[in-house]
Length: 357
Image (tube, rainbow, N blue to C red):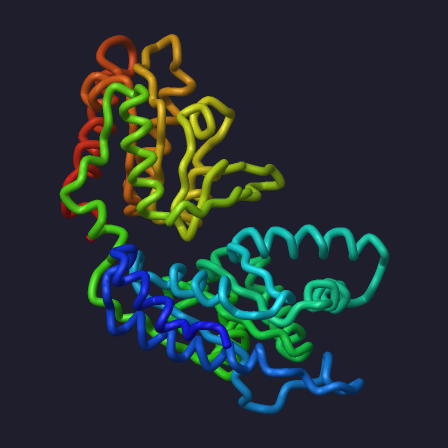
């Protein structure tokens, strides 16, 4: 018999990896029941797979709460220790990009209902689907997601998802939201809905009072940033690809709402406001490395950097940064240096202990 999830949690607390939190532990008790259900032997027979689930039967968990409360950590602990192979964990934004791409290809075949074969392909040999950061901001996703989930549930797929919003707040104030309401009802009907009211924001707590602006951007700074990144992610990371107006924006290092990228990745390429808005929609913390001193000779990069910082600031994204100079000296002279003073001011504010409280 594999170790109980709460026992695994308690071990990590004893090792100092996690801080004890009754709310987190309570969620794990619920996830343990779900693990037992998934690991139980399946009945043989043609009705076992793709049969319509019984009315009101719960097929997973919708875990929501504030940023940094440990939602992704709990889901990852569950995912790593549930004893089945037919499982997948994916960022919700990336999943919807995949679905949009699959629908585009299927529609080329002239089928009447493209969602049906796409849902069947997703559900094939899959019993558990774990989503990180469910949020609906795009009208195209809003029109698709309800029918897609309905078919996944009917196929017997269990779903666990984390979100910063309660189901009733998804796609809030969105275009034609009345058409989206049935999906909210579906989530509340098919999933246990649990608010994680953890005692502290562990992510901000770890950064509180810590240095978040490192200069110069040398080997020493990189080692310090490495320590922060490992502490926040537990050494786990993956590639995140954002689709913006038909283009792909690649974030080289990502985990649980946190991204790490170099200045060239985000400012040395022809990116714009829409790209940065998509990034802010997918993350709550950015580690930005190797910001050089700027000048009129790097005007394009400087403009992108200003736009990036403005977007992060407006989105209340936490920022860890390494740069070749202090904020006030990043663009010290030349055309645009006066306007850069606001950016420097925002960078300073984003280093304060009470940023993103």
